[in-house]
Length: 182
Image (cartoon, rainbow, N blue to C red):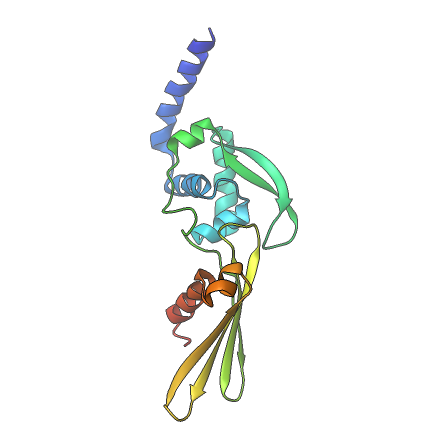
C-alpha cells in the first residue's frame, strides 16, 4: 500500500515537472546551489526582485518541492526570516548553478567617497563559506608623475591577511569595472 502511494506521487510529480515555469526552475536551481536560503538571499543571488522570488517560493511550497528549513537572521535586513530548503521532490528536479562556493558572490551596493586626489569605494561582500559580510575598500589615486591611476585595496577577511589579495576585492573591482567607475 505504501509503495503504491509513493509510486503514485512520483508519477504525479513527473506530470507536473514540465509545467514548472522558467522562474520557478530558476528559484529551484538557486536553492539547490545555496542549500538553504531566505527569499532575499535567493533574489540577490539571481538578480531578481524579492517579490518575484517570494511568489515562486510559495508556488514551490504548494508543489511540495520546497520546505521550511529554519529561522535565522537575514544578512541583509538583520531581521529573523524563514530559510527554505529543497524537499526530495525538489532535489530530483533542481540543478546546481555553477560551483556553489564561487557562483555569484553577493555584493551590497558600494559607497563612493571622492577626495582631493583619491576616490574610495567601500562595499560589503558576502562570504561564500561563512554566514557574514566582509568590509572591502578600494582606493584609486591619481599618480601625477606617471599620469595614471593606481589602486590600493583592503579586506577584513582571513585570506587577505595571508595573501594581500582575495576574491572579495576581485569582485568589487569587477563590479566597478562593469560600471566604468574606475
